[in-house]
Image 1 (cartoon, rainbow, N blue to C red):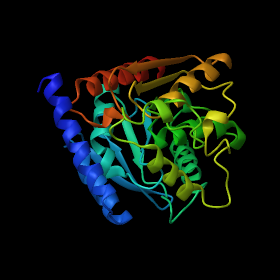
Image 2 (cartoon, rainbow, N blue to C red; image 1 turned 180 degrees about the horizontal axis):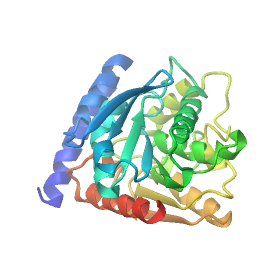
Image 3 (cartoon, rainbow, N blue to C red; image 1 turned 30 degrees about the horizontal axis):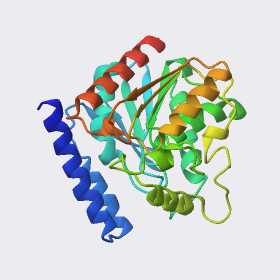
Length: 296
């Protein structure tokens, strides 16, 4: 499929599914449709397990064991998303990096509000290290809301006497629940997948009445970045959260972090989940090379 045909196909699918969501679906139905929407085939070996009560999965483990690991945090606005929705992306990350990918299902809002999700991500990171994996041989990767969880683990780790991971990759990171960046206004029409009202509703549901969006763990754009490992950030120029990527790159660089930002023209929020897009293939290949370069 050529570049133009791939984009046309993906954009038609996005319009269809988001249109159905907008016409009024239950959260349960939205979760199911999101999983089905992103259910790409997975040819990699898969091993299912439970971590501290959470469903989890190793993708690519038999072929990539003892060579380090990727801990992957899925996106979905803290309310949707699962192993099923991101299995295809995890498989492609495993193939590109030559590493096993550990995915998990953290608690979702509104059943479980903040800080349930970031606490779950930290618990899985601790579990991975307890299995004997060296932190320097772990890459933390997340897309959208999952990028906030991955960054939160890297920021919090020393507070819990845990070493930081070897590297960090953020895909279309949603790092500011206050939505104060200019892209939340300038990319409203450009981003086909995510809209401001949708994200504001997700943020309110996730935080509830007891937590402010300015809290650095909810919005890790406001965290302290000194000491973070080498970090890669990928976003699209039509991405509604683009400002978060740009601001994080600036702030992390000023804090002495080795951070690289790549922005794809005409691409929308977490375009990497659509494996038929050449831009997604390019992004995943670069992430794989980054992981190979920074893990032992």
